[in-house]
Image 1 (tube, protein in one colour):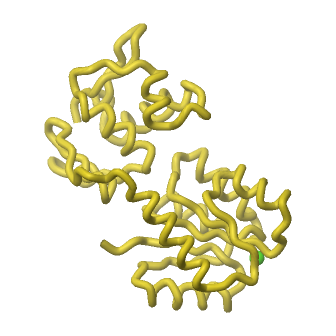
Image 2 (image 1 turned 30 degrees about the vertical axis):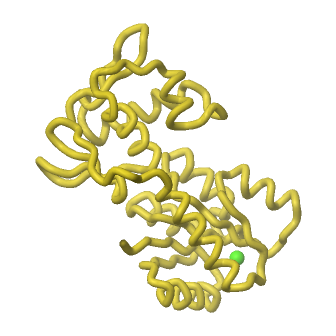
Length: 220
Ligand code: CA
């Protein structure tokens, strides 16, 4: 399976070098040169990993990643920076980056870190297809397939749907779903947010609300 990488880097020579390097390693690469274009690409296509320069014209890398994370884009991100200070690193990681690399970087190190991020995405994907009733969830591609056009899900949407579909008759509390899918650093509100994303993409019946208790799998 080919992994898709989005490179957002305003230094054109470096962007070209990254595209050549990553394509040589078998990745499918899209490259854009400013934050606005990066935002548009990342919101309209599905990527397995993002490589973001921190200093970009318009929307900078940190701001770009914050916006993407708020929108539910969870592809792991490697941030590149010209100023490799601790404060910078902390800000980058706080914005939702999984990893951080100072320029100039060693290409082998970049490739190793990307492999690690891609592997992380693919962790615990033992089952390929999860039965949703009418349609199926392709866990690896994060697509809902069958009956009608395929629907692409973000990692977190897919993880939530997979958890619900794994025990389709069980009612999950918000706390349980938060702990299992999002981690306890998040508030319960994250569960409602992602339930609403799933309903928007898959229909209002996709997830049932069990009043006063939580949620269970609906009809997809
Ligand atoms: Ca730059």
